[in-house]
Length: 125
Image (cartoon, rainbow, N blue to C red):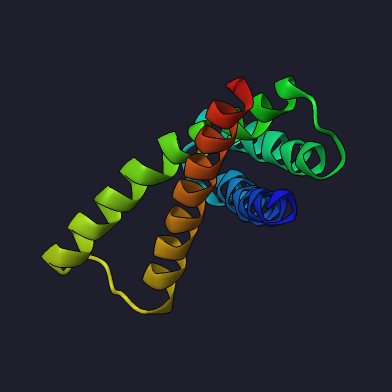
């Protein structure tokens, strides 16, 4: 179970790193800067460290790093996907692969958050 949860944290960290760097670099093309982008970068790095802690360490405090990273990424991605779905159903955004990719990332982040909460609660026992 530790290997699977570590893989989930790792996959979520890689997708979070991709999106944070992509959104951060969009500022070169005139997109407005948001403080969410560096926060997403820190959360993704926290998930990456949490994945390695899950694989190689069994201390109780190690469950905080993936919980922090998953919570911050969920705080960004859930409202973002809600706005995207609203725009999609109004006909303002085209669906397809991009929409499916974003829905997959949100599902990955929510699964990571669920696994990290459950593992933190089980570590208390």
